[in-house]
Image (tube, rainbow, N blue to C red; front, side, top):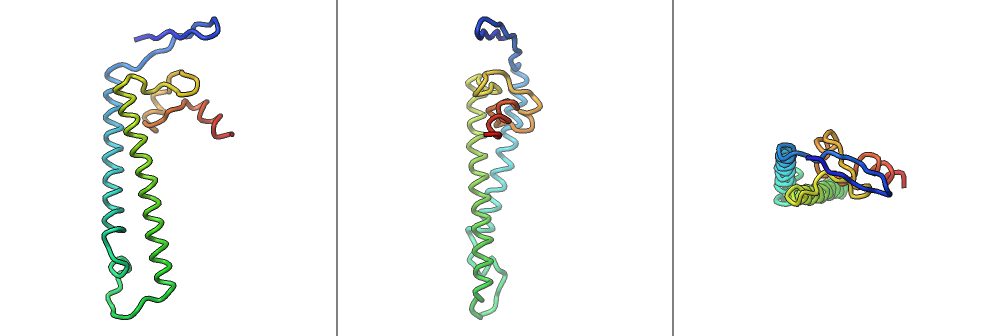
Length: 139
């Protein structure tokens, strides 16, 4: 399928993704979602469902040393930070699935050109083409 864009009197011809391509991208997004959900479950099981004593592996009846408590708290906060980052990725993947269904998947939010297949395979939740992403990162 071919889409014709008109900008300031110039005509650009761009190729839209086929149904087969979109189906492949949907599989990639769903696979990444499964990985993230598995990671979140693992973080949750290791961090949130264990007491400090269980997490540290300490089975003695002695009180904790302050340094051990601080290390355990740091580890727990680090794991929760990872979980928060994973949840953000999950939301971005859900948004990518929505864009696949709506037909706007793979279109750059800034310049409205198509994002390359290689980029979308590496980062299926990408909303910007490489040029626009680089421009944003420079700012």
